[in-house]
Image (cartoon, rainbow, N blue to C red; front, side, top):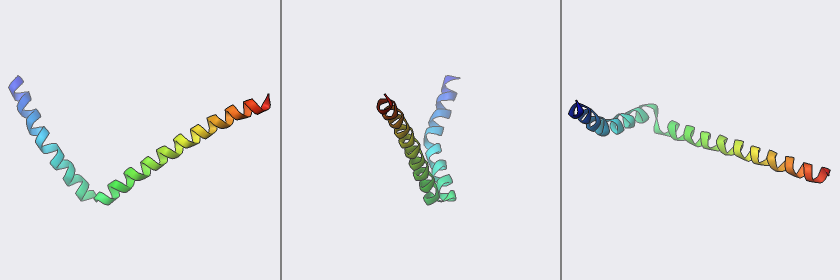
Length: 65
């Protein structure tokens, strides 16, 4: 049983990167990279908005006192 799982693991280790490459090529690598870039930009915008909101809240409380 253990040897069967080991063989499945070895086959998967060598074939999954190849299949992933085929999927990215079929969908277009540029589209994939564009989506990754857009996601990173959106995440950065959300983080910046949260930090700005927190800083504004703190400064508003300091000035208001």
